[in-house]
Structure formats: structure tokens, C-alpha cells
View 1 (cartoon, rainbow, N blue to C red):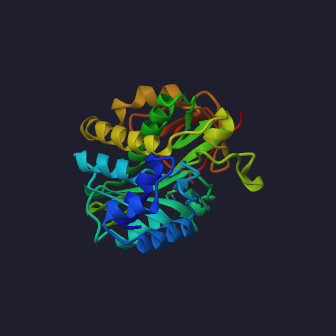
View 2 (cartoon, protein in one colour):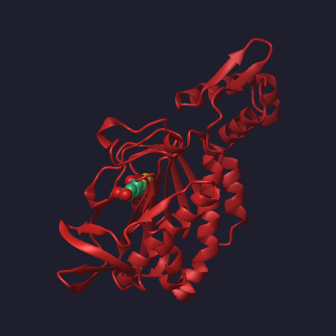
Length: 314
Ligand code: BTN
């Protein structure tokens, strides 16, 4: 999609109907060129109908308002570029492959992922009308110890934004967001470059937003915001709010580390006080440490966990 397509989409979004002539004169192109562009927008999945004497109408307005996100990115002191893709294998993979050409603090968003990646080499099931995006942060002094707190920080930011949007979400260590006992958001942080040297971190965020339901294969463990609250969410607003909150709090994270956010994290963490399985081993979750590690008790001894798969025995 180029700037002209985005402009057509914006006009369709803002008007109930808009004629081909009007679009053609706005964009300084021929009526035929508009026809062609409408066709290709339809092929990308946009539901555009046309009515005689009235013009074109965008039937389903649950679309990402690229122009608004671009507007925010332009005003941001952190984020430098926003890339909107209709379909990609994985936004994390896209960022990894292209990182040398992408500026620091690029955000890549995809409407569809054909090979979405989850943690522990799992697949991230692609749901319609969700949020799938990756943030590239470059030139970080890669310190493995900071990665866990960093992903926890991202989870906290998303939880905070969802709550501002009226969602009663919680965090499952390390950075899954849960609603009514099921997962609505996952984060996959990947490092690339030299360890202990300059490199980058790619933070992949997947949120199940406006799909009515999830496929049978994940219905016991995952859900969507819409399925739980019975209403639609403004995905563009969510994306902008997440990026804004991330930007706003990043300096606090850099200055004070995870400990600045620890109390808030703990107040929403559903693992605390529960019996959990960490990589299959049964433990009691006692606390979240200063750097975000899981503090557990196992056979009367305290153990600290900084990575691994955690299952809660509700
Ligand atoms: C998890 O397993 O909980 C993490 C899921 C992360 C999914 C997101 S969607 C956008 C980004 N691109 C990917 O391929 N994965 C992440």
C-alpha cells in the first residue's frame, strides 16, 4: 500500500460514501486509476462496496487507521518509522531480516501473519482483527540480564493500557496477559547481534482483539477481548496508546530498571501465592524479585527462576 492507497482508505473511512470523481480529483489521478486502486484494496481484504450515484463505501470500518499511527510516530521522540504490512510470515522475522535497513525504534505491523511465532518455538495462531506488531530497538548494550525485565516491562505497559480501555486483565509471569483465566496477549522478545555488545532487541506483541472467538485447538487456553467483553475495541487507539505508554515509561525503565514497576507488576501478577509448574517442576510462587525473576519455594528451599515455561495450577 502506498500513500495514495492510504489516502483513499482515509477518505473512505471518514465518509459514508465518496464518489470516484471526488477521489480522482483529490489524488490528481484519473477515474480509471481510482478504479484500479479500489480493486487492489478489495484484493487486500478491505470491504468496499459501490452504489450507483453515491460512490464507494467502506463497509467494515474495523481497519487500522495507518494515517493516525503515522501522525503519532512523526510526533514521537522515540519511534522513527511505522511499517504497515497486509500480510507477512512473521513481523519479528521481517524485522530480523531487514534490521540493517530499518532505523532504531521502527514499528512493524501486519494485518495477517502466515507463520506467526510464539515462545518456546510454538506457533502464534493468526486471528482476524487482532494486533500483531514488532518493535525494533537498536544500539542497546545487550545485556542478557536486562532482557527478562525488559519483556516484563512491556507486558506491564500492555496490561496498563488494556486496563485504561476497561479490560480487567492480569499478567501471568513472565509476560502473558490474561483475561478471565485465558490468554489474550503474548510477547516474544528476540535478541540479535553480539551478546554483551551492540545489537538489537525485537519485541513482538500479539493481542487477540476483535475476533468473535478463537479456533477449537486453542479455545481452552486463549480468548479474545471481544469474546470476553462482548464489544469491539478500537485497534488503532490500542496500538497508539501502547506505543505512547511504552515511550513514556521507557526512560524510567532505563533509569531505575524493573524495580520502578515491581509493585504494579506484582499487584496484577496471577502467579503469586499459587502452586505452579516451572518446566514441569512443582513449586510455590512466593514473590517477584527486583529484576523480575520468579521467586519460588521448592522442597523448603527458595529458588529463583528467570526463564522457563510456567503453568499455574488454579
Ligand atoms: C507467546 O508465545 O506468547 C508470544 C507470542 C508473540 C506473537 C507476536 S505476533 C507479532 C510478533 N510476530 C511474531 O511472529 N510473533 C510475535
